[in-house]
Amino acid sequence: MEQKNNAAPISIRMQQGEQAGQPMYANFASAQLGQGVIIVDFGFLDPQMVAAINRLARSGEKTPDTVAAKMVCRMALSIESANNLMQQLNQMFQKK
Image (tube, rainbow, N blue to C red; front, top):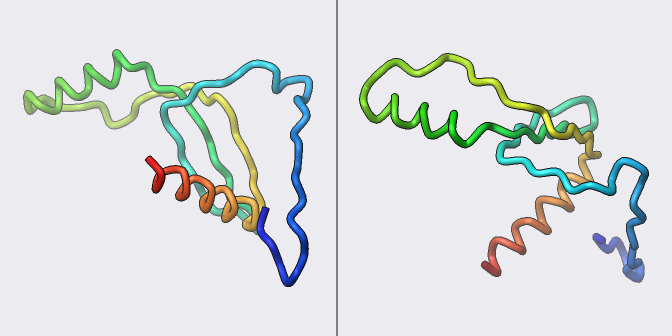
């Protein structure tokens, strides 16, 4: 959690909600800016479809203009929360 002024950090322990019991897997994400929020859609693209499109592209054949993905989850984050998430992800990638 981001510190402001001389405030002490507060540890936050997340509790599972009713619908949060099952993990969700996404292999695609899209973000867009809303009014005061960042909307992030997480989706799943069939890996076989992605492989087929890659084969078409490599062979010079026409690829589809649109590919269907199943939306797994939509999240609306405040700008501050999105910034905190970005910092945490950047730290994780730097360690890798």
